[in-house]
Length: 562
Ligand code: ATP
Ligand code: MG
Image 1: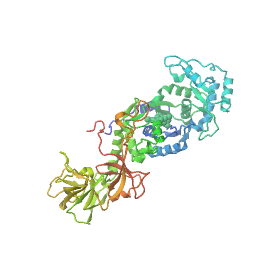
Image 2: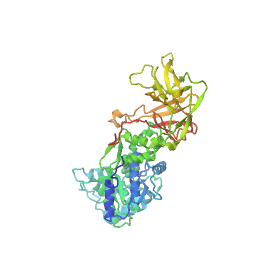
Image 3: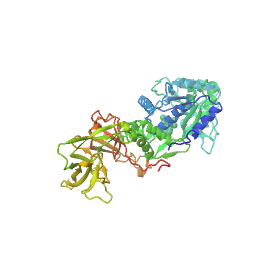
Image 4: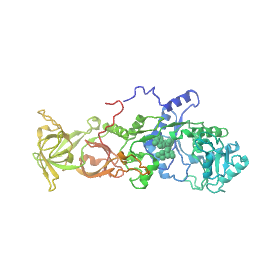
């Protein structure tokens, strides 16, 4: 699937950057990831992080992590820490370029004063509702504020007094003086500062006026020397304002760069909840067990589930960058983790829904050890000794008393292979009073040790097993989509279609002893049932709790693959 033309096929962002460098607009490249610390990062953010940091790497430039903490209401330091951890885990390195937008409040204030002096900003006393009314619509121009032509000296005085806390929240704002007749509503004298008597988590009560995003963001970029400010498509209509702020403030401010905004389409996945707002709702209403619940697609959840940074990078690379919004099939993310783990992790045996199998012609009390490769596609992982005995566990679904056609597993009279062990012919079963099968009986062929018969006879079914005497029981958690796929993510009233069966716990799964040495966070393939990871939050050394990362099979195919 490697694209042979990779060296020449460059995405549209790379093409813009190439041009800028060629034309001498910039001599080096600086990108940034600007999260607002009001929640945990999710898979969509991973795309932006990987995109920005990879571009910096590709062009031997700089990648900044900047917390966009200009909004004092909902930001928390818990989120700052989780965001740093997630970005580092993804392998994006901001080196010593860690910044907080709130550190620039002084510079932003200075830039605002500069605009007032230049006659490019004014203090407006209209209420929020009036400002909205005056703004006009897509088809009608706006109306100028009666305060628009206030003398510069009066504006300077009022803005200073806004900063000094003389006025109530909402009583006045600072607006850029641009063009009330602009076809772009963002350019109709946008508000750039508001009064908010709120305590900020980093600057405390030092400020009671806070800059609006559209004013703050370009200035943050320009202060840091960001060259390419890459953001998502919903900011496309804001670009003229971004450019205006950079141009007008650069006339008197001494910024490191004149950044350029480039938009790309957000990453959406089918049938999962990606918006921070919606994830927050699921966390707060207790539908899930915290921000790292393995059914979510936050980075913390993916990590806990057993996703690797490599698999997420691969996913982002496969998705690519585009200018058109679309949803990516969740199965593609699953494809990426399967592909990453299949060579990397040992293949072990665990029985999720156990039923006993007794091999009647096997000596009682004898245990033998079979040497089994840990991953036959990766000899570097070595081998282990797996105990085998007269009593085993197999999956309940691997036995049927009266099977349908094409069922090749255990049924009376049929011979199957016990994986890595022997051929076993099923002879009978025992049932309880309700008719439920309790024990399966069979006989083995000692000559088929290792799983092949010397006389060359074939069996169609191979099943996995765990020796009863040495096997141990541990809970296994199976996850399904949190969202009911059939119904779509959201109802008309905005509520979500939660799948009530998104978590199933198999309390009595049994597994071979080696799995009990799993470190919390360690991953394995359980043959025939999927990739599993010892949940780092629920497991203890010697007492693992496994969660399924992904099952083995999928209908997903890479484009062009057979
Ligand atoms: P959400 O839409 O989930 O609420 P957000 O955009 O409010 O996220 P921020 O912390 O403001 O979250 O975003 C930080 C950066 O991540 C921004 O540059 C934003 O454009 C980018 N980003 C957010 N969501 C996605 C996504 N789904 N795909 C790609 N980039 C995204
Ligand atoms: Mg946001």
